[in-house]
Length: 381
Image (cartoon, rainbow, N blue to C red; front, top):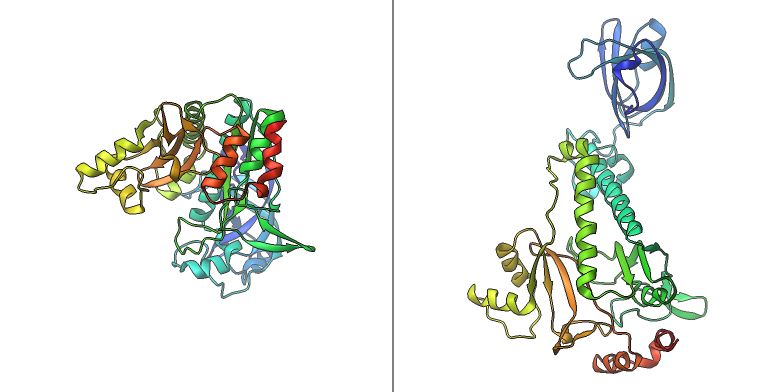
């Protein structure tokens, strides 16, 4: 429907979609026909055509050949006068949910009828905006010289040494679902220098919140010859470009979702972990240097720093084994989290590249270096 224009008046067209509304008015029947690109009004005339659609349920799928013509409707710039109607699939009523959204459905019913729920324009708009966001991310990273890769999702050991792994039998061996591409992407930079991956990863976190998913889509990058400040600039550019792209290309989706996407100003604000501790202290939340920031602490910080900001230079003891220390203070790491208010959106940092130091860090964190032999030998090469 999105390709139809008022300038096509008088021309014959073929359209296909699902019937969103059906109104009988004497010798005329009006169909509101929708597809993923938009909506159009079809006027059905003639005894045969009206008889065809008389018992047609809403959400049934049809193909219509007709002519674009003027309309008296205030909701449509034109309409299609049908000449031939082909009913491809009849919707069996009662439907489990109302995909138009006039009747609210609870989330369980919507997920159980997910394919039908995608006809709800609010749901569809989220998926469309996600599509545009991913397009923008890929475009930005490619323009910055990154090469897209795909890493294994069935692995032989924990990629970050964590315990939150889904285990499975891989023929006669123990295997796990990948929780991160971390070690693979580090090794890929040996030959490819700059890589990125957009893929599903899996974490067996026993959490029942909207912030912890057992399967999620992750955007990962890795680059040679960058310090963590350089990586923060890449991330700023990626995020700012997504906002600009969505603002420009998702106008109807913003209207449907009743949101207003504005372009971002970069660079984002940058706050050190130490500054965050001091700010929280002034708000009556007293923490020692080295304490982790809990959700309640981040919520307080989010009140002080609304929008996007970096939380950087975390204590080494709070970071994974592969993160590099700061030269002027080895107790702190060259690391960052990108926050939006209290929500952590991304994390990163400078990587250790000395295999001896990596071994030391593994032992410090109670991990066995022998389980990471394949990874460590890449650094000898």
